[in-house]
Every structure is written in C-alpha cells, then in structure tokens.
Length: 144
Image (cartoon, rainbow, N blue to C red; front, side):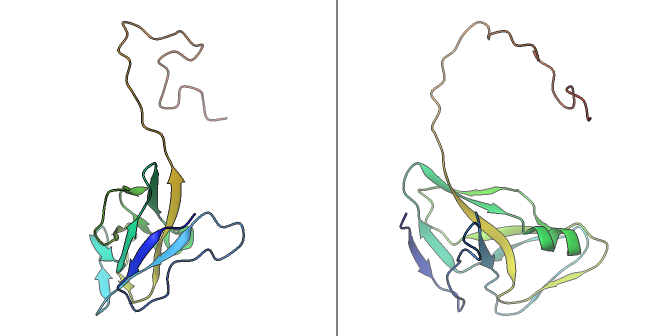
C-alpha cells in the first residue's frame, strides 16, 4: 500500500525495523528537548503529515521498551489518525514514573500502525440474541 506523506522533520521517514514488524517508529521533532515530570503529559510533534485512503486509520501506540524502562506511554492509546485528517501527527505522551524524563529531538517515542477498519450501520432492535456469557463483563470470565 502506498500512502502520501509530507515530512517536515529533519528525520528519516518512519520505517519497519524488521520484516515482521507491525509498527513503524515515530520520532520526536523538537527544536529543544522536553522534560516530562512525573504524571505530566504533553503533545510531541513528529513533523509528519499523511493522507490515508478511506477505510484505513493510523494507530499511534506506545513503544514497549519506553513504557517498561521509563514509564512513558501514549495517553490515549491507541490514538487514531483518521483518513480525512491532514494536520501534523502529534503523540500525547504521559510520564507514569516517579522520575523526570527528557525527550530528545529524534527520539523514537511511539509506533504507528496502519489498519483497515469497517464502518458500522446500526440496526435498532428491542432485544439482543442470548449467549452463555450474557451481560457478564469486567473480569466475569475469571483470571485463571
């Protein structure tokens, strides 16, 4: 699939690091570093603008190493970039650790996954079909 992209950053385009990678790393496009204090959040710009085909979305997800090692994650994970959005891709990062974290220009801060999606058409009914699970949710199937 080919996707139109404008790169206003000084970094290379996102790419797949391995043949089986689902996501491409997004890099911070900064003029100066950002220090994210514990429990603080910010939007980090990437300098990237994309034109997705209708029926697709770009999902902005956390990087597992950044989350595990530093407590830095994408707050609205996954963030969605819709096919009709033409603005700059920004990443909402939050620091869930107890220590300040410095984000440097060019640092890989999130990953981008291109995903196909369907559009739903609602059919209003008076009742839903029965299942063995019923209305059970939020752990109702157990933990082991």
